[in-house]
Image 1 (spheres, rainbow over the protein chains, first blue to last red):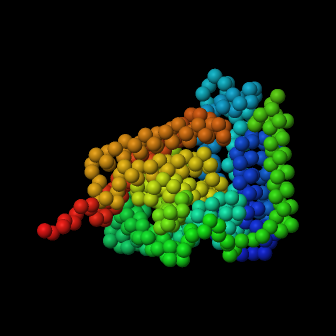
Image 2 (cartoon, rainbow over the protein chains, first blue to last red):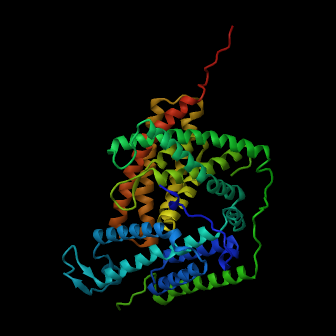
Image 3 (cartoon, helix red, strand yellow):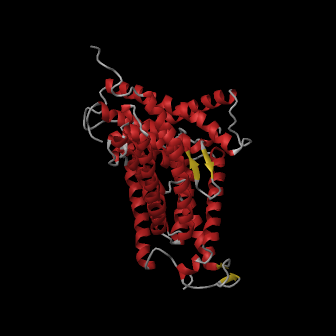
Length: 278
Length: 186
């Protein structure tokens, strides 16, 4: 429970930092949707390499994100293990061929090249967007983020809600820690040493005050915003908004071409899967 | 969001602060169940309260934003099918606002029982039907694996709302002034 869990904006002067938040947001959403749908290994490896190159350009310190990377890999590995345990023959059903490595298809637990290939594809799908997400989080100023959301067509009140969430996460976290320490001083045990139920009760003793102070905070903030006439007009201008420059248009064209290649591959492969076994 | 003065501002703020609380609860106050990527979330119980006070739009958007941000820093990228399902659950909880009428300060046992039956059905539709189907259609994951995750999530989320959600609703109702508590002197 330390600050390493949270990663945030880091002001530097690279190509990616100068790019407008809207461009990065469109890029991230476009890539994550096409990567979610496709099962073409070549395409997934392509995007992964591309996002690693961008990661290099963004000059993000690897130490800054090493803990989060480790956690992501552990979660992905657990998930893949579960995919294998619940359906060891799924790869063969998808690709329609049987190239066995270990035991026969009649056994429940067996291993085929198809299954390995399917799991490898899943691994790529779990990980390809990670560098992009980190780039997005670390190179985009949170204050500019709401402006970007508004620019791509999200209503400004919703954008403003996102902005409030980003702004108040550190405050809620600080409240949580303060209340937690106070309750521990009173003798509630919430660490791993406690048994399940004492731990649940200990957590509840933190959560209740946290929630009720936050409800008061909602009242205070909305009154302050009402005094400043928030929501009077249909539109809103943003102090941190960045205008599109030449590099933004170029990046959007590159994003469009990559997505187009991904869509065209559906036609070439005759579906979402690229099958090297035929 | 409709533009009707103070209410719409409150919805905006409740969405933002609600999302921040959901994020912190998901990050720090989650107890793993043993099945990968499923945990007992206190956030779901909080969602019931948020929906009962501020309605469907605030609750739905708050969990959508909070869950997306949490996925960003936990898994690297949001798992869209589950994020969207969570948003729908929040919206459905918010629809119970008028029926519960928590601002009146009176929360009868009947209303609580009704709400709990309602939330168990909502969670069933969301986690056993919608989320796994989305995973199968969009992500092409094995059916057995996603249904195990879905059923586990259904049980623990319903449990979280039934215990934590109910406690929060009762405590919040107690802080409200009861309707009709003042009598005109003659």
